[in-house]
Image 1 (cartoon, rainbow, N blue to C red):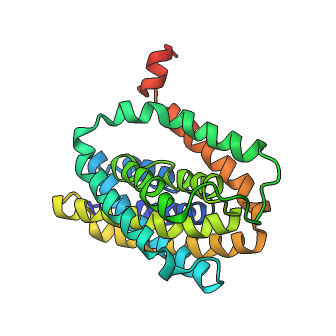
Image 2 (cartoon, rainbow, N blue to C red):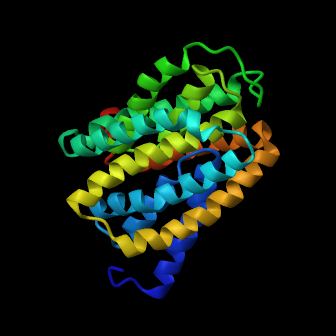
Length: 261
């Protein structure tokens, strides 16, 4: 596994458990695992590609957990997931042609906006609210847009899906969380297929971390179903703020360069 020391492999496995836990509730697990892969000496492209191997394990594990408790109907949501697969693959295909730094400049601002929305909006609960667009329109607009972004760049995609389900589809927080996981799985698989064709994946390392993701996702999804909105809302806010802070911590981030800080 890239000649990594056993203690490094153990730390990556533990990082995957933490990422799976976070992802199953609020999204943002990739900003735990990708930096850890980079710190382990894995080159950037291989880190991103390998992250796409272990990510679907957590998403699939959480999806199954939510489906078993009746929080998501997999058959009804399958067409939406297939759209995410196609759009995620398309995003990965064009990733090399899109300046990631330009795209990344706006992401911290969007994440902070999402955090403020969920932190300040009153009456956010597990109860459904007014639906603003039909499921079909949601499936052909919001889903492919976020999935395309997931394939190109990735950080915060789960939070963007969550925002769409709550704001546009009128879902309660627990229902939105449950439905986000299958769509996120779709866009992950689509981009994974492209990376698999292009190479760059460290399969053994990715699969090992996938087991960690599975464990973390099972723990996180069970806690989310017990705690509902009371647990999901603060973790979602913290996740968005942490992701934004992580992105902005890079001195070469375009937003910091533009602001001169």
